Length: 150
Image (tube, rainbow, N blue to C red; front, top):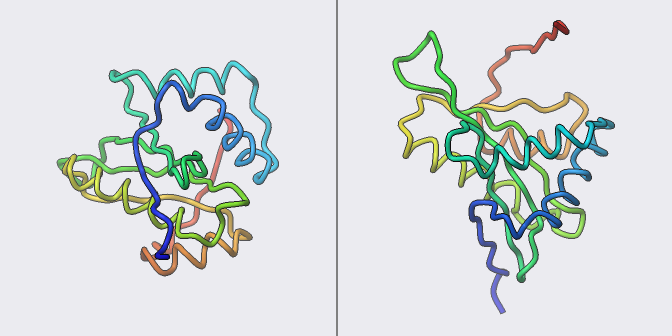
């Protein structure tokens, strides 16, 4: 038997339960807590065509095992837009099966289709597993991110 088929598709309203479990796993991984209204707002944005936020899921053997969220925004450095990959997560049972790579490639395809000049993302410096993948599929920019709560 060959490799299992990984299907990448847009998140659908019927994915709510699986998406929620993955979203909560992602937040737990980063030791983050969001209020239920932010989670509800994020879910709603993923299904609102007027919003710039998009979501894809990875399906393996009929189960949703990965999520990615991305958005397009303008830049002062290009006439077109940039694509920011904001959230990427695969379930523990789906790790080391290429889910992350497939999701990144799917977002890259959508960025190309939209005419974006760049696809970029952040990860925590201690996330060695993700960084090992990212170092294979992209170029590290050398820029550091700073935050100022406003």
